[in-house]
Every structure is written in structure tokens, then in C-alpha cells.
Amino acid sequence: MFKRFIEHLRKSITTILTITGLFCTSTNAQIGPDSLSSPTDSLKSAQTPYAQQNTAGRPILHSLTATYNARGDLHTQSLFFKESIYHFNQLIYQNYTGTSDIFYNHPEIQIYDFMDMGTPRYIAPVNLLPHQHAVFLDGLHVNNPLNGLFNLQHIPLDMIEQVENTLHGEAFAGTRHSLTGGTHLHSRQLNNENPYTRIMYREGDFGFFNLDITFARKLSDRLAVQLGGINKYYDPVSNTYHGFQYRGGFRYRWSDNLFVDTRFQLNREQRVMTRFINFNTHKYREDRDAVYGQLTYLPQKYDSTTYWRLQWSATGDRNTVRSNEDTFRVDQYFDYYHLAVSHQRPINKLNIKLRMGMNQNRFWGTPFHKRFIRSALELNTLLEYPLAQNLNVRYVMHNYLREQDGLSKDGDAVLRWHKKQNWLALSLHYKEREALPQEDLFHYQEIRPISALENESMTGISLSGQWKPWSNLKINGRLAHRSIYDEIVWRHTHFDNSSNRNFSAFVGSIRLGLWKFKFNAGGQFNLADIHLSPERSAWGQLRYHDRWLKGAIIIDATANAHWYGQHNRIRYQPVLQRFYWDTRETSGYYVFSYKIVATVKNAQLYMAMDNPFSYEYEYIYGYPELYRRIRFGVNWVLWE
Image (tube, rainbow, N blue to C red; front, side, top):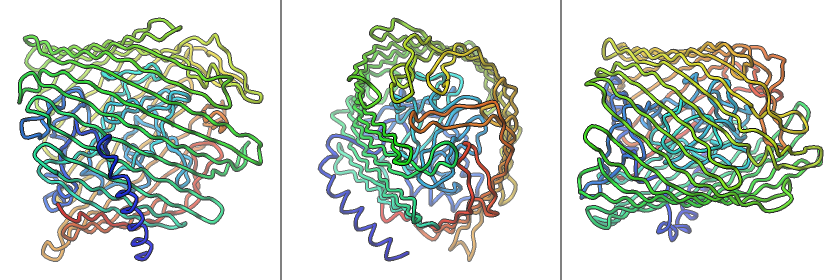
């Protein structure tokens, strides 16, 4: 293990040094919204009582409210409508196989998992499919514009600072290719006070290991740089997985009023997937690169209530799926360009945000008879107004104009009462999703497109709240109903609009801290025409935190148990890379895992195991989990 660690450390450092010259044009993380703590802060927090580690009281941040003070430090404004579901300090409790793992304890989100190391992993809200759900990274919409998916394996959990969900709308950065407000990932930031260099190494059974390195430095009072990367490897004889992500960027303060952030990401994912039903072994490969950034201007320094911001991005993706046994090969390519201007200003009690943007998507490949270009304009308006001391209203309107497709409008409205950490919110939501190129232009073998597809739409209403009677107890709940109209569904040879689909769901959770332990539990129950998610599910988590050997070692232990009930059989079409369902049902199953971490000074050593009883289960039909999996790792902050 040690020799392998040294060898991959050497290779990774060499690679990062090779791309150092690129940091003038891009970055690992958005140097904008969420610079809350450094990795060393996370290690230090383990030395405090657990109740003090809870980040529930942190300001909830959003990319549209992030600005800087004269020293170049991040200055943010709280948006109470946002709901944080993950913070980097919680990484110590996660069984690491990917960023999607953080959603296991959030039953409103379903993980579409092939149950094998390195395979793509997707997420969607209860009773929705992954192509209907938007994912944002640092305010940038990252779903594939051809098939609507985003593989969360592209984002290592180590680089994530905070995750927020806007399941019922409430999203300011909209998109025409989803029915939800989206999941917002905010990447780790360079902390001006504590620049850091960190190494994370993991190794496990079946030949799995990866190495993640982050380097950050403040080079002057005006310039700060950050570089990082992760190498991933898995080779259990017949199946091979290789992947990496390199990231970096810089933050520069031109003056007390003008700041620029630029960043880049280079992603490579390659995996052999074994299909037990309908399709035999096939190969998946995706190369995805992105450069994006923003320029922020404050008319008055130290004042983040009014600002102008220019945002830009360029993304390229080369995706291939093929199988020699089933004789298919599909190559799909796209280049996506985006430019937007946003402005925020208060007028008395009314807070106004405007965002106007344009984008262009160029795509081509074997399923398309020519290269296509689709351009669009968008105008988003957000209004926030305090009706009373503890009562606020928020309204968002999205307007889209795409060439040859006309104008469409989406809207969200939220009424929220809050008092200290107790709150109650009523949300209304309407969203349209236009047909993806995969649905109306894909032409390959027996698959034929239908050009007259109607836009599908979804209306939703939800009532959610939080009650915190004392500091160690918190209860959350949400009751929601959604209706989908003209849903675009797969008919085995083509896509078509289907009849309406309705579903209601109740989700609840409780968090209780006692002495050195913290207990979290929750579950969901839904009534639906089609159960894409289990009709019932429940989860529980027990955490332990203590200091041993007179404080020389800090021990953190976590045990998880999940139960999933019956649901409609979920299938996967690899040629299209599309999930769909049939009328038959799958049986319920249990999932168990645990993790033990020892913190010594600036290093965390851990062991984690998934499925310790080798219980066989599956979510996607034909892709079962058969084995227990064990991993060892170290998180080491070398210096600040």
C-alpha cells in the first residue's frame, strides 16, 4: 500500500506541476460563494464537542450573493430560502465512493446507482428520472445538453464545500432541460487566512485506490491560486476503471471594487460495465473539460447588497458508449458556451435580482445526421420582500427564448415564516422541459425520432418546516404534491408524450444529540401512479465522537442503516444512456455501512465498509450489488 501511495503521489504531483501554467485561465472551485473553512478547520473541529461541529446555524450561501471586502476576503449575505444538506465538515462521516453518497440520508433524493466501482452515478428527486433534475456547480448548469444527465463521478466529494437543494423551484439560475430547481454544489474555496496543501489517499478491495491532492497559496495581497487533482483506479481483473479530474484557477483583486475569479476542470471517466439483462458487456467513456469564471463589481466597497456580475463558461464533452458483443457504438459530442450578466440591488425593503444571459450548444455524432447549433436567450427575475418581521415572500420568474422554439416561462413562489431556527414555508412551482436532442433527433439502428414532441411540464406545491425545541433536537418535514403533463417517455423504439402522472410524498427527519453520540433518522412515504422511487423508505445513522489517550487521538465512528421498499422496475438503455421503467416491481432491500476515523494532529486515518453482510440488492434492474467492500484512507493537511 505504501509503495503504491508513493508512486501515485509522484505521478499526481508531476501532472499538477505540468498544468500549473494553466492556472491563469481557470480554477478548482468557484472563488465566489462558500469559503467557510479550510480542511485544517475540519480537522480542528473534530477536537471540539460534537454539538459545536453542527453547521446548521451557518449562513446559507448562494453564488449570487457572494462578494469580497477590500482585503479580498469573501463577504456573503444569507439567503434564508436556501436549505443546506451537506457541508465539508461532514466528510469525516461519509463512506467515500463518490459525491452521490451524501444523498443516502436525504430521502427526497434517489440515487441511480449501478452498484459497481467507477460506474456512472446519477440523482433525481422522488419519482423523477435523472434527466429531469438539474445539477449546478458553482452556479453553472452542468447537465449534459444531449441526454440531460450529469455523472456525479466527475466531482470528487473532497472538492465540495457545501450542497444545497431546491427541489421545488426557488432556483435563480434556471434551465429549460429540467423540471426541478436543482441540486447546487459549491466547491471548496481558497481561504485567504489559511491557504492549505492537502493529500487524501484511499485504497480498498478489488484493486481500488485513488489519490486527491489540493495545493493553494496566496501569492500576494491581490492574487491567490489553487491547483488540485484526483487520480482514480480500479482493476478487478476483467473490469477496468481509470479516471481523473484536474482542477485549478486563480482569484485576483483589481481594486476594492473589482474582483475576478477564473477556474478550469479536466475530467476523464472510462469504465467497462457488465450488463446481466438484455445487454452484455459495454464500455462507457466520457471526456469533459470546462473553463468558467466571473467578474464582480461593487459600486460601494464592503457593501454586498448591490453588485454587478459578468459570468462566462465554455464546456466541451466527448462521450462514447460501445459494445463489441452487441455491436453498437454511439459517439456524441457537444460544445456549450454561456455568457450572463446579473445585477442585484435593494429598493427600500424589496430586494431585486436580474439575470440576463445567452447560450449556444453545438452537438454532433453518430446518432445525428448533421452538426446542430441551438442558441437561446434567458431572462430571470427574483424578488424578495419582508411582509412582516418574521414573514417573507420570494418570487422567481424564468423566461427562455430559443431559436425556432419560441418563448416559454417558468415560475416559483415561496411564502416563509421563520423565528430563530423554527420555520414554515409554502412553495408553488411550475416548470417546463423541452425535448432533449436525444429525444427528438437521435437516429440509430432501430431507434427513430419523433419531431412533434410537446414540452413536458410539472406543477408542484409543498409545505415544509423545521422545529427545533432545544439545541440538541431538530425535526424537519415536508409534504409535497407534483403533477407531470405530456411527459416524454421511451417506447422501446422511439420517444413519445404520455398521459399525465401524479405523485405525493411525505418526507421527515429527526436529529438528536446526547452526550458523545448523535442520532439521525428519517424516511419517506409516497403515493404515486408510478413508483420510480420506493413507496416507503427509511434510514438511521448513529455517530460517536470522543477524545482518547488524553486528547492525543480523536475518534469518530459512524454506522448507517437504510431500508428501501418495493418500486417499479427501473431499466437502463445503454445506447441512449436513458433510464425508464416498466410495470413490474422489484422487492425491497437493506443497505448497511460503517466508518471509523482516528484523528492525530493534522491527519485523519480511517477504515470504512459497505454491505458488511454481503447482502444482494439492486436498484437498476440487472445491476446487483453482490459483495462487501472495505476501504482504508488518510486525509493529511501538510501545511497551512
